[in-house]
Length: 193
Image (cartoon, rainbow, N blue to C red):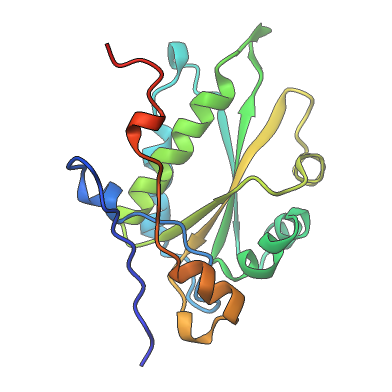
């Protein structure tokens, strides 16, 4: 019998269950295909994220396990990320457009981050697990998918079904079982007047 991992946050104030229960796994089931309906809902949530002047600067590359695109993304991952992310049923690149109709979009990366956050929360609510990564070669991603100078990858997200922790390597199990922590909100507040 496999162990079930849960990491419900111990919050100082009440938050939505979907936020308290969401966590970033590194253990994905390497055989279960992506739930296409859940993926579609997560992409739809990302589409409806807020953006400055409704510019919607985000662009997505969705690569399912077994595809050449998935392998290209795995190849662009750095270090430890390569050891576990290939098991994810899908890898999603979130990229930001730097301009629209020749006008700079100074908030593009922030807005794309909002799209990724909306994707993550909806994915969790729909039964998928996710893990965002910053450790990847942005130039390799850009070259692999034909990004011009105006488009840059912001994050890569592993998406899929939760794997069995009992079959994971010891180092990965230790990371997965570590408690979720955040510094107290007071340490993040610069002013609360």
